[in-house]
Image (cartoon, one colour):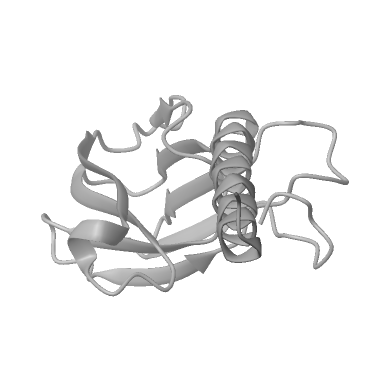
Length: 150
């Protein structure tokens, strides 16, 4: 004989399992973030770039992506050096921590919110730009408040 309590506990466990499976599918089909680094400065730079999930209690559990990046100087009569890192992490809000390991241009921290609608390109992008003055700037797609993806 099944008691109402057992039936209710089984139903709650079943719904929890469906929720976890649905979240895994949702995360897998979330657009991936393209990260690009461009250097307009006349000196080469070395950076450490970290994408950390917002709201994480500890850095180790929130770290989604980290890379050590060396980018050459802007030549006088040439193309802007650009490094592309496709599909670095799911497109979602991140704290972007950029540590300059060369030429004393300072560390920066930004909040990134992806935009998954309203642009011609379906790929959310995050662009780290080192200006001609040697300042680190973050550019990228913004995010609409009603975005399905976060």
